[in-house]
Length: 217
Image (cartoon, rainbow, N blue to C red; front, top):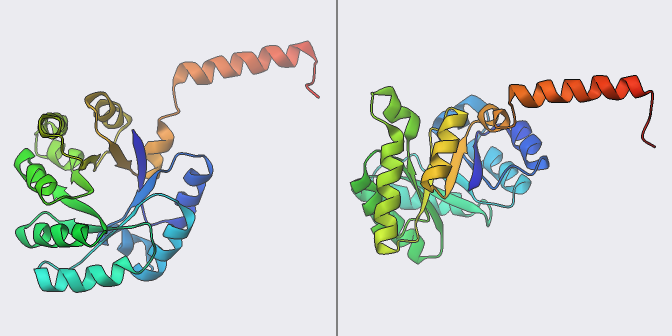
């Protein structure tokens, strides 16, 4: 499974990239707002930090304007992935952008039927939102499971990008089902390493080592 970090904070991206935990980055208008920076400026900096795809989202909803904004975003860097809304206009733009050789991420997916349409449009990634479904008492993992089965049934190459992952269990369950990618906030990705028995065991080892009075090197 590939790990994308869901943030526009360049310091957090650098930290995780240096740890070898970043395969790509996802941003959205809300994360750009939180960064307090101009979208083109911060996205270009992010693209220079990571080698993998960096999703940058259009703000338009009609086809013509989506295509105009996508043309601007596409020029930021070679590893840009153009993020599009899962609407009829967004799907039309997806098909044309993919035909022109661009990577696309169709976002705000909440049903298997929507994911099927994204795959038919040739999307590079489709982003089903796990956490937001959980918020309305629908198991987001059921959606990942359904999409995985449909894509496998027909050999679609569109990758399932499990989005709105808020917990380490979300990431584990998405991996067990077979999502290709998960995107999560930096804190959630870093929390994957934590286990109380690891911490307790390390404390014991360090205490015993100190009693030996030895040094390595």
